Length: 235
Image (cartoon, rainbow, N blue to C red; front, side, top):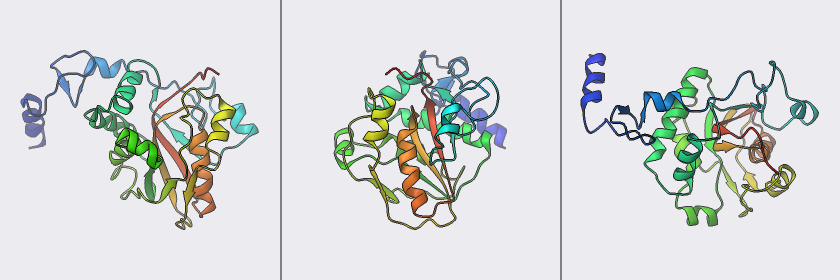
């Protein structure tokens, strides 16, 4: 029965979309198989904490010298073309139809990882940024993980206290200062494991700041989930 339904979906014009990258009609869920295979997969091995690619398994020098508040980062792709173009169109071009495509990519990685948490949350936007953009791209991605890595999400568990300067274009130290006291968490999370979802990880400063606040409220473990990771930050 399931094979019959799969074939029915494949031939249905309702479900069969054109590939958002090449326009091919042989696409399912917005990406054809060749274009999906061309997405820049994060090289392995990678740092067990921040997911920065390494020559051999272990921890990178930065995580050894300055352990972050988060416990691990899980990210399937490198932030470069073509997935960077999709993220940019989704985030800044307000192409909300890409939410399902990008969410499916992240959900596939989550299924493969087989990890579970008590709750999943999205990195919050300030009220000003949310009003300007009209939506929180991290919330859209987090929805794809509910039921896979956690059975519940808590959108109101944390919030951004101030409208910080956009992280894009800032150097590593500036990024850390920019989000140092940006988040607030007032709900007790004693003994809970929390998955924090964002679209792109660059230095990990945002995740680090939020993780610190979550652990102040008793979270036992905090891990980040993102679609992409920047490997070489230009400062």
